[in-house]
Length: 98
Image (cartoon, rainbow, N blue to C red; front, side, top):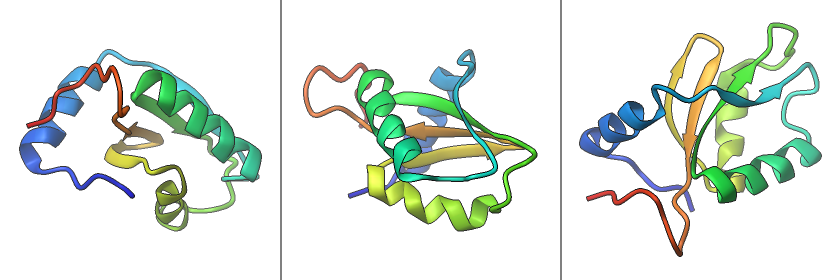
């Protein structure tokens, strides 16, 4: 289940993600099961992360965005080819959203 972010939470997460660099890249194969599994693993480690959608990706982001529900990731923002994702850990979260 994806967390619905209110504007205050989204602003807080954008501020915290500003200095981050993209950890993963989505290439021409788009969201393969292996990429989704790795994305799930990285979200468990980082909670807040950026990914880069490469120019050679054949699938538009609008078609890939609904697949973020498979890893329960909330889309914080998309600027150009960079997408910021968030999924809060159940234990030991580094983010307190109010």
